[in-house]
Image (cartoon, rainbow, N blue to C red; front, side):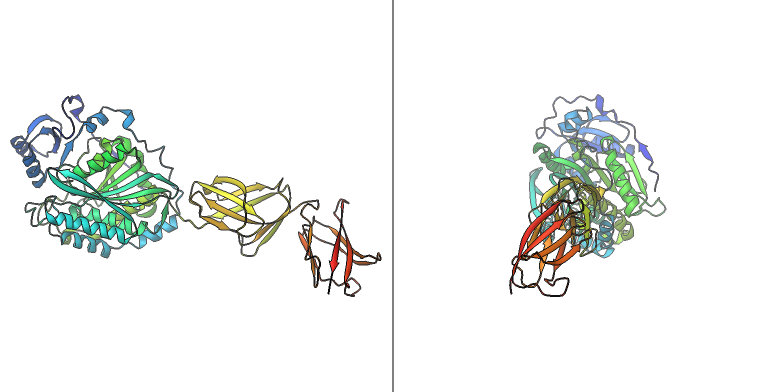
Length: 567
Ligand SMILES: [Zn+2]
């Protein structure tokens, strides 16, 4: 286990700034990061600075300067009214993490481990190569749409439902690519794993490979889609590739706004942005950046990491860490976390040499580092969306028969029921009409069934998840009662043998012919049925005719019936 150390960041001074005219889509305001006075002077030369905190400026500026700021690498966020609503603490915007997600973990861990073992560096480098070979994915380039079409086809090849969301990015139509794996149990709740696929550089229309920023994140989303799509989940997963990130998080803002307008219940967004560059000499770790609202999410992810990957984590809590698409989710009160190689733009482990240049290429990346960071993201989604194995199995061996006397308790056991509720049934025929025993928490993996009130019989057991997955027992449970409520003889008339079924425990069976001669006199054990081969105790075969059967249970209750025997 790693001890999670939280870095608390000082709260920004922006709260004191009151917005009166920040109407969305009419007049734009921006947040711009700065590292030093040099950055600050540049910002002042292109923007009207309204407020300054320790590392961020709040500005108004012209559209053309937005692009030049983005190209020069200044992290930028276009601010809408929600940024300030949220910061003012409007409770109506809070999605709440704890009420929407169960605690770690009911998930079948061996399935997750097996799934993670299939993800390789080769696949990661292959996706990064494909993405950087589009030459540029700048939002105003034709190649950006070629990349979009590629992503649509790739997600479709995994059998997912794929759609695009168009939005205007300063007069250019851009597209988010959204692939959906519907949840089986609570599909109305969604988990998002996201990465922006647009890129930029100092030669943005021709050469903006964006390998680290952010083909690494897109590769993680694609691999999550490829491998998670083979499983079932309680909750819906959305694999989202955003555009327009570099102009101020425009695509993710449009997406999160749409989720909010549709009252979508969002469990969390895991946003992956730059996870491939390892700076030699700096601590080898993955940075998770969260706001205070999403701290439980990050604690959850930390447990997932401890279980599956053991990547060293550096966790930062900062309500004002607004510099990638996760903050669009924060603006609408949703939980979100950023996965990044560095805490932020000015950190020593940030890929500052190649960031937003033509040199941001695959050969600069550390693929072992990228793979580990990818695995943390994929495992986190598997756990958050509640991967479960739909095949349940009753633990008794094949062909088992167990017997209880009515009123006794029978322990039903099962495994792999990784869903919140399991319904238990019994049926007098295999895959026949079922009667409900109980609906219980699947994680309990056993249930003590009080058999009082159950008609005596031989029963198959059936387990069902809420999604409808079901499993039948391979053997039978016999419930005996002390009366003859279920008693029958079959076949009747009999030719070669007759089965006395529905017997109380320790029943005495006597069969007489109509002359009153006794053919057999048997006492059963703790058994539900007895099959007679029609041979009498003195070895003569019973001939054609009608016979009288007298049954007596262990407390002297009698049941009398006729049996016909033919040739
Ligand atoms: Zn980025």
